[in-house]
Length: 156
Image (cartoon, rainbow, N blue to C red; front, top):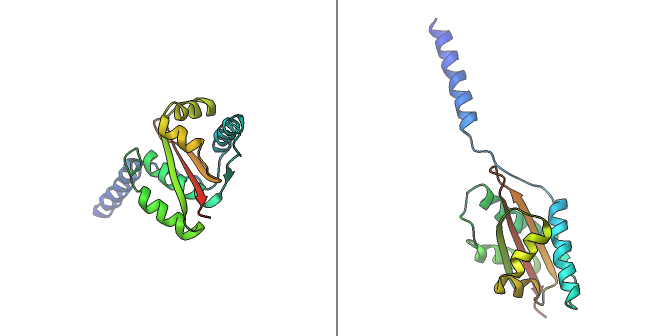
């Protein structure tokens, strides 16, 4: 009888632990939605006579980590950790100019880009003299999306 109670208690504990565990959101590679947003940004850049930004897998990975951390509630929405992200990028790609845009909400790729373009600072980044980018969109459990776009240009 004691053995059955012990087994039942263990099973109950395991079930409760698993059901209380926070679901984590992880993406391993650039999604179609990421690509769609980048295409909208590049369409805007081209309409302004600028060159298209080139997707970079490492920049995407850094952007995606930050986006996942925001979506999972591990960091607050915003630019927390930008210095550390910049340092990692410089170690991998070399010294350069680095900046980022973040957003949260829902919408089409065009709506997300339009919201960034409505912000003077984010518009400057989108229309800036950058060559490489990594852009990640991650949907949290409540359906809300989080976005990070990192821009990079190597120093001459």
